[in-house]
Length: 222
Image (cartoon, rainbow, N blue to C red; front, side):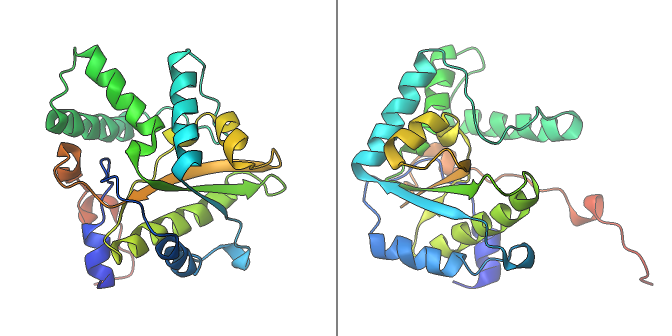
């Protein structure tokens, strides 16, 4: 797939077919994605690929924690958005709920939608990205953004969809229990991956982008 087409057509997939993704394809994607840039070539990412029984155990463990009222305790905390950033977040949620037919007052459907994120959107596989705690927080997040985007773009070459999300790793104790990721690592993000279910309503979402003129300052040009 042409790289420009891949960038323009990539989207977050929130509904997947149950078909398993061959390990060889997942390995190929990582061989491509690990060419992503990192600060001074430090390559801080450590990747755990989950599928099958391990993934199902994590999904079940996440939901049990969520339904028990356990407060999520992610290794990377994000402060609530404010101003225009919060508005963009709200606009996205409105678009998704409209596509899914979830009314604002329908608490049951909203709760079920929330669970989907903790179940990796029911994808048949997922990447979990972590980093050694010896590295100082925040700076390496730039590198993780680079490899995450590259994973998502490479996946398109194989007809696969992805979604960069944090709900799947909001209970790191569940992740560690079933993957063996040690306490010496910070779990950063997860990327569910699989063959998109194009009949799933939320997959029709076309999220909006600000025009270049609204976010760019040109200096030194005529």
